[in-house]
Length: 601
Image 1 (cartoon, rainbow, N blue to C red):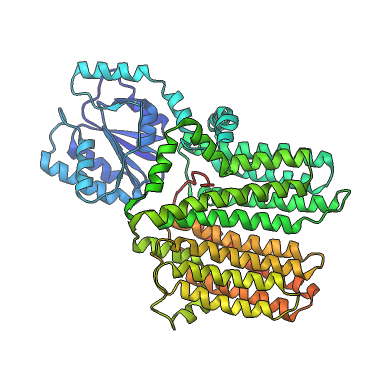
Image 2: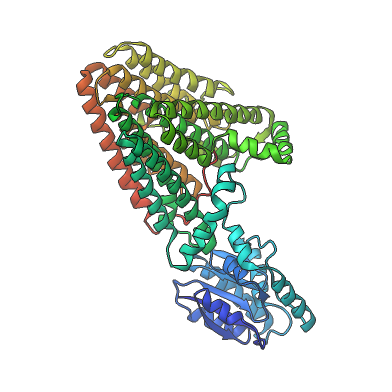
């Protein structure tokens, strides 16, 4: 149990101790700094400890935000500070310092908690201070100030604030106006019944998998049921994040589930649509469209992730294009229009659900591909303009993140040793693009069994090594990882399509899904400041250039049927290795307690 040490003389009529107990704290009272130091030392080493001024007046949700968020080792609001086990030593030093400075006298005027926060700041501690908005958190110095603070508390409904803050401040049009108005109440219902975000996330996944199963029946009733269930899954998907924010229940396992299940749901649904099309009256084969949709959507996300990481901490980050974007965001209708045309997850799933119920899988995929292609062109063009017009110095951290996102394997590492100086300026993304385009074109334009894709893949190994031979700090170097993703996934799609046998495209779908999982896993580790997956994992699965070369060689030396079997075996092998390592990492104690705030597109 967490321990809250209330410092100073108790205030008659204060509900502070009851509020702290309702938040899960074991309350202890210290009359002065010396006694607070003693109680701090006596608290179990692995527990969270909070110091709270006895004169604190404020909303209970302000205390919740300041004292219970698991993501931050140190956190504070006016009159209260908390430390998790990792930061206990820093808090102990700060309290000891204040005890020595104050001589252990009773706290009559100033606040020990606020002085400790000042000492933590001076000691280099990273103290998180949550945004309280209209919530009240104060330490009144006299009765008049206390009365004014209590009136301010009474004037604001903290439950209404809590419900509102459970919803992301920036979300898509469909989610904001058609889901969040009621899903927030569903989140509160779940919280009051002790349900966890992880349980809701799992329910969302199961609902989406059932929807995929309904789509796979190939019947009109199955398609209608699939559309309804897909929307229900999305409602639960919104609810789990809102529940996490409402109850501040963030966890390492929840980070992993939230980071991966959205993609698992969407791509499983694509597979269900493809199976349903094959089983419907027309026996339509849309596996190529399903795989194309997955490739396009994954590449869109890689563009988002790479651009954001490249500019995460860029110095002198200014751009006329960014200024224009901010100006457009100040006009109400343009905000929603721009959020809708990038086809975020809410709009995308709503479109898929409606088209599944009303039309055919082929029409659904055509609309999805057209919509996502337009959204990708719009967002990528804007980011290219921003990158070319901004004056920014990108950091070593950004270059490291882009190198990790590139997913270069042992072949690229060996070749780039020959060209350590690398390429200048815009030549880096240009070479990455040309090499990727070459291998995809060779695979798409030659007949099955041709050696031409192998030659294209060898050229791709060379160009991809040249592209990462120096740190990726150029204006458009963030485009290198997306070019690599498009090259690898596009090659697999083209060769499976050329095989022309049943099962080749589904096997390719499985392989791309397994590799894409690895790439998403890399993204979320970087987002959690946990670094990239271990180097041995990248070596074992070959890196993007090694897998691309292997697939082209298999297509050149095997029959179409054998190639299908080989793709299936490769998909299973990659999936087992990356899933095992991912699960080990995300359920380990060392994984970061983060929460994904939703995909950027």
